[in-house]
Length: 299
Image (cartoon, rainbow, N blue to C red; front, side, top):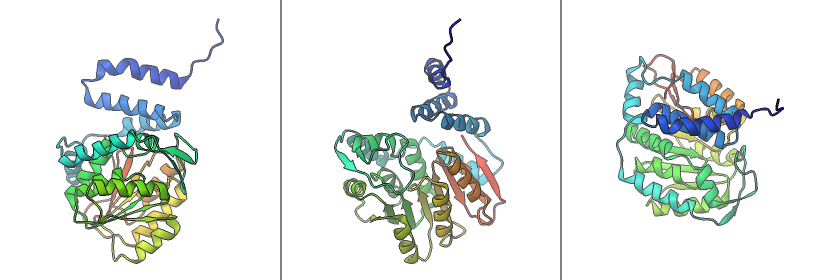
């Protein structure tokens, strides 16, 4: 008898590859397999298990009219916008940019490449928000039309394009810790005709308080700059002071690690929070006072 022990990760990858062609017509199942396979490609089997747990819990409809409207208008909408094609063209160009830049990382780093130098193509492929998440943010901004918008973590500027594209008249500020990626982001935003976007470069410990001090309130915040529990909770509390009943907070990678899941749990439990929506890759927070406290996990 062979002493070989099967590798659960290889088994996961193998089953996903075998089953996917037969289930491609079933959209939800195909999406499940694609995302489960992506989790494994990120070389984090525990991450794949978190996705499986999420999928088993997630629903496609709720008892909340407000959330069901978001499901139809934001999460499941198939409506395409001209900006989508333009932004994905920018992403494709970045994926073909093989120049190397020096990375200044104040956060939890990359799960793909922990080197202090990375190719732009590598960042565009592994770190930029996916088209699906970008389009969800676009539709969310398009629906609620926030006027004062903040992004923590510019990276190459792809996610900023999706958010700005839905409301070009908004005041959009994005904070980035790495000067080299910020340079590329400025070029990307200029190409997207979003030169009015303000990019502040430096450690969030300094740039975030400075920005918040200059603002009377925040309508919308996308947290994507530091995937560590303590930092995420701290940034939440800092921005919370400028929130109001119609503010929207989006947190990236809420299942990225055990610490991030703990941070998400703390955020959900805050007394100011009334609605949270978990779509695995991001978590969305609302503060509407006319809605009972509810937490949803949506496919």
